[in-house]
Image 1 (cartoon, one colour):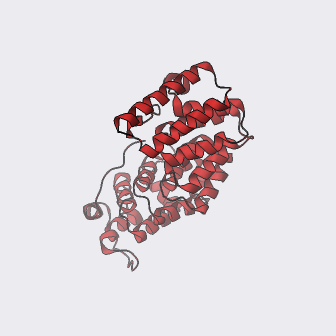
Image 2: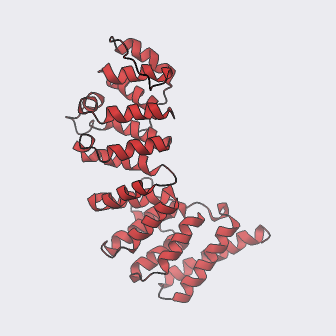
Length: 303
């Protein structure tokens, strides 16, 4: 995903002068600094100018600007001006930059925009747009019940693998509760749940709420392979085996970046996992080595 352009609202004034000739309509609900960007969105056919104007609104932190962006993104004619819909490689090029910018500037206004778009038939005329919309929705913390309903629904629409990563990254209570539900779901193949654990949890395995969620998962009645997948995600790291020759595979943060409380919790998890048994010998070795490393870190801190 390309990084969005950084454009100020003031800079859009120059775009307005060069791309639009129609007068600006009265926009009582829109701040004056936003009206130039809105004029571009309403009248321009220059895709670069449209992208920059939409990115400016997405990054403005102005709820009225975000509401205006939501309005135009639900128009077929605007989406056709923003991107070349007839060319598969181009059909979401600018849109993904706009939605990525929203993900970088989360707020209740951006959540409202996402909830409108995810149920809008015009926007969903191309289902691929959801790939970029769901991260923008997941960026808003804490996750609302309405957002949870969207992720639960889209799990069954082919977005399970994406959603599980977004929920753990969000990390708020409702998001992690849905993640737990997804891992415990016997209707999902075991291999998929193990892959989800590896991809979603590994980058956040030093965060206490994530570990507490895994601890609850491990206390449930799980297939042995899912249990092993949860334990190895915390205590091991086998990137090539788990992710193949991926260019940028998930990476775990160093244990010495974790809090004392978190490190104590990991040790308790390791002791419980060992007591439960049924772990393969290589995992028992990795678990033991990780626990020894954590004890060394805690000893160096004087605890």
